[in-house]
Image (cartoon, rainbow, N blue to C red):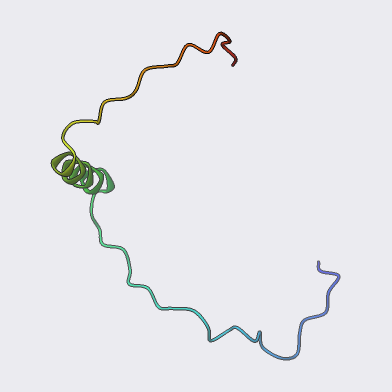
Length: 60
């Protein structure tokens, strides 16, 4: 049950948008593993982090 009457004209954005291809039937975990292997190949070692500065207060 709806309290609004059905609109007479079609929505003004009915023909808008982009058509997108259907997703391939691949294993998403394999795709993620391939992506992480590429990231690891580009940056195999994390850059060193600077130590914490002793500011006298430790707040959470």
